[in-house]
Image 1: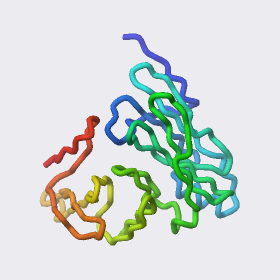
Image 2 (image 1 turned 180 degrees about the vertical axis):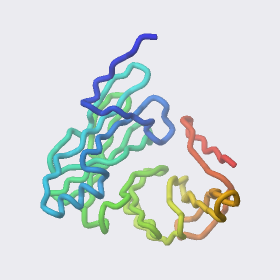
Image 3 (image 1 turned 45 degrees about the horizontal axis):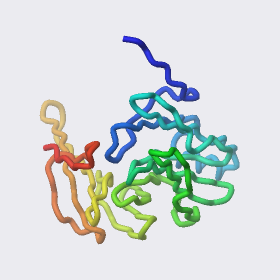
Image 4 (image 1 turned 90 degrees about the vertical axis):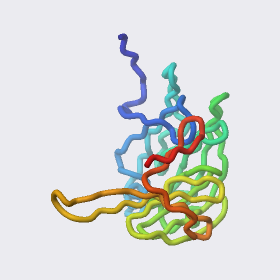
Length: 218
């Protein structure tokens, strides 16, 4: 089988863009680590050179660079939603968070919305999720929905938010007990409403498939 070479400006790992698409992949460099680590460097007076970010279309292998690597800026993982790929572009010098949209049909790039950087405590686990499209930040025991609405709710230990479906928020929670041959590890999916109330507890995990369908794996 012939090997196809994809020019990605040195990015050697790509992953599927989350959110009901099987055509698009993305790649990021990690020269400065994740977004939060880049923020810490900037706040310490260090130079943030920017982040290389690419989108790759399957099966033709066409490559796009929707957010050019720019000094003082840093990006984070994208999501697919409603015909577009959305990504975070944090502009540290101008203290701005931009949500950028790449149109999957015409390949045009636009700014979907802008928020002041002061709208978040910091950029720790600052990510886009669906659906609807939303921007959130989560620490060890708290989830903050920053946009389009503002919601804060508490999480239990070993719990992390990963998916929204309308008014339902999905959290993964892991457990472990015992040692050696008696060691056990398992996971649950906690479903909460926007007030943080538990609606349902599902054994196992939940994932969204390329057609948008949500599968419960147990």
